[in-house]
Figure 1 (cartoon, helix red, strand yellow):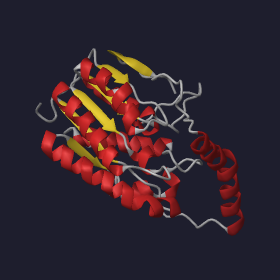
Figure 2 (tube, rainbow, N blue to C red):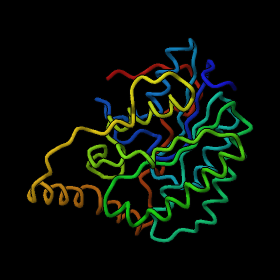
Figure 3 (cartoon, rainbow, N blue to C red):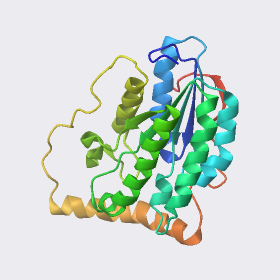
Figure 4 (tube, rainbow, N blue to C red):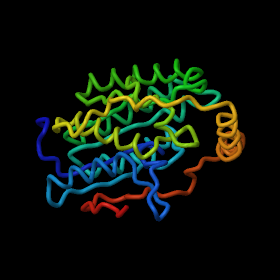
Length: 259
């Protein structure tokens, strides 16, 4: 498909990043960058259709088994695939298997759509990012290789300093804020050849550093509300997405939820 063409449909595949956590709406559901992108594309094309198959917590093997065949069958104009990062955050990971599963996903999706979009996911600056950076970069090398082979677009969020800013991340330190999701939507929009609405790479204004008390309070809240439950799920082998359906499982005309 020619870039900047009239896209008539979008299917989003992946995990919590694509589901939209933590861009919460008043009813408690999540919006996220994929919904924002769909809303923009729908403004250009009457009857635009959208499906979002992403479910929080999913590993790349689960994405391939549960989402990829459904997405491929939808024959959408645009498919976005972001997966594998949850695997890299596990204490132990077989990166060879991650590569094989990601390859399997791309090989199924690329022929099924007119434009496949892959991403180098963003990462929050801090000790967790530093610890897992080698695995992430190994994953992104695979993304780049597959994109070159299958003529997919790669959106480089990992290389964007603005998205590493801790203020772009929610209190759980794993998911983007609404502003972060808005910037990702703009990045994908531009990658599809659309005219820029703004510069998603613009850094946030400088802010005074937090004092010791504020930092410790934030750390304690994070540990209590997010870290302990996350570790508990790792120990028990459970996932936050177990039993959870996709929020938009069918490719249907898009209507934006109200804020």
